Image 1 (cartoon, rainbow, N blue to C red):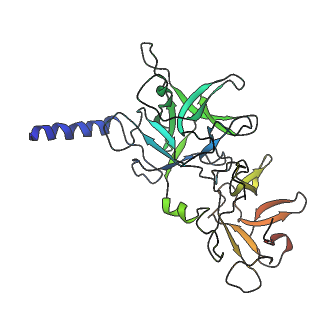
Image 2: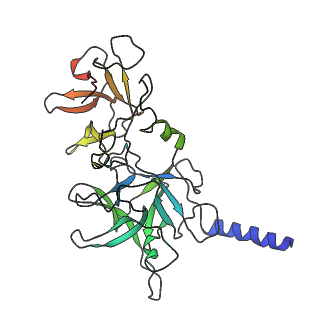
Image 3: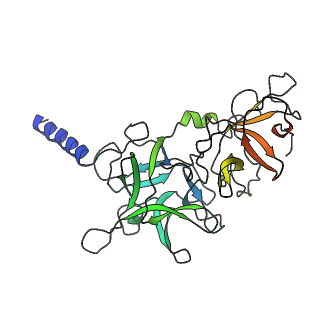
Length: 332
């Protein structure tokens, strides 16, 4: 083949890279076709992104933010940008898919801007079908990733294409807190500033809810899930942390509202029998297996607040203190 052709091809790739920079993750690595968590830049205002119904309904699904900053949520994948580069480009229309195998609503999980919600006066970002081509309906599923500020942050931008002449009017994607306290993605004048964390498949699989069924619990971290019948899907997910009322600290131990959220793993320790496995019907300590609580400077051991009956995160027990011991049973 003509060497001049290769030179032109190489120059085209360089120009494309310069014209549209590559989106990078929190480690500074270029984002390609893998799955990534979408995480807030500002701490103390929720966690990653997940799926949830609206107005107390189970289906259809919207794109929402986890209430706890310790929950990474569900990762996403980027696809279908027109620029012929392997990396995810900045400021180019692309599709975003919540990367989950299946949902109870039997629907695809590509992001799109839904119809105007007259009750809440918002355009929400919802889960919808895979965009096919560039028809008018599919154009509701294209978003841009743009840099925002000096914090290494990004924002999502929606620029609807219409039949009208001229450039489209773009809107940032922000957070709308609804009447139930759910943090929903919606078109907004105030952008939701985010960073991207690569999805570690091996780490996630090691804590899968199907990984250790039937095996004896010894050392290590385990996720705690609700027992549910096949037809009873709306019982929430794993365990996590959340603030109580208007006080940011201390943190309560709570259940993640979304069934798709595995929550934070726990560790069991300090039972008196001397066995090398976690025994039934013996007092023991329970610790949330996370390095720190981010917003609150305290340890992650479970303890009871006798005044309210809440299970809270507290310091490591140094002696036999009744309110920090729990009795696992075969039925809770």
